[in-house]
Image (tube, rainbow, N blue to C red; front, top):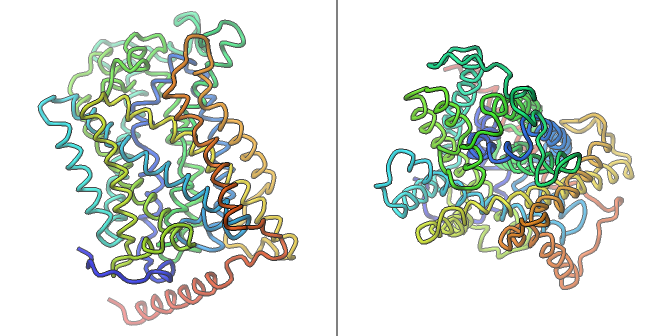
Length: 525
């Protein structure tokens, strides 16, 4: 275990780089594939049908790819901890940096109790005898230990957990394609029946609340809000930049791999869910309303029950539990590093800059774990209260993407103004800055559309409204208060320094890194 002795880690970004390339490649998968893809994705299917679900995931995947293009340039240019906050601070306005950092911390920190609640609900698929409090305490202690040990152990844990996720999702894809051909206990060769309107009325595009074109649009919008919460990845890869080994070589490959992850896991996942179970299935409706929870709410488990498949549901449940655990572990890491980035920039107490001798921001990890104590709400309340954290997390996602897009536009503008060629960037994407404008527009639109269901007839829910829009009001207020009290100013394009000192430290680190590798090759094993 890392020493409890603390040291000043102002220069830690470029000295404690212990995340291996194979760790970074899978951390993006580990943090994004969890409850949403295996279980919660089915909650949107009854409202939009398989066509709307697939279309929504394809549309939002294009937004995430645009964000990936922006981040790949920003982060590889200067690989530092909490890049969203630090880039917004240096390129746009310190007030924006504060808002971005706090927003992303809230998103990641709120996801931890959500995943712990889901973990507990999945266990109840097997037994009700394990006390909820005991489950929560066990998970919190495990997360704490994994994140206090040196970061390389965190990376190693996520590496193996992410492999388990990949095996699970590919196995479920194979299960879908095999059973649709009739290889199942009841020999039901269902094929693409659940996409055929002559066999399942209303498919592939179902109506929601209203009939006609408006109902189809609302069904698609409901699926799109699910896609916003489910689809991600580049932001988690970016969060490793401050601790990535050989970052300017490793990170571009990791960002380029996001395209294949989106296509393979999320889009194919949306397609298989719409194929394996009809959107009119009563069990799916119960899951969507919250009356069927845990593993029983997974569309894959529902399909296994319908097809008479026995035993495999327990294996799937076990692997989903591992994926949920992995996602929560990633969120603890990202939340603590975001808080650490805010401390480095002086936006929160400098006490949070203190780290263990191995470079772990221990106080930031502790605060994140304290926020995760919200998972104890399910001890006295139903888990549905904690699961509603998805509303606030979804809004945080759109705010974060909008801020990244806006920051990139400022960055692009400053490069052009100062005559700096983008060919000098370690990773240069195409179609910029148009992709940034596209992602900015879509993110702002979804920021206000995420909680649209509360405005539909008979759908008002005060909790959902508050969780969906509190940050839309609070963050601009925070921006204004910080800007007035600290007298911050918008960064003019000619005065932006592009992290000159930090880039020099990274240059020195990389020269030392390559020199060490050359020596190791000459000496041999």
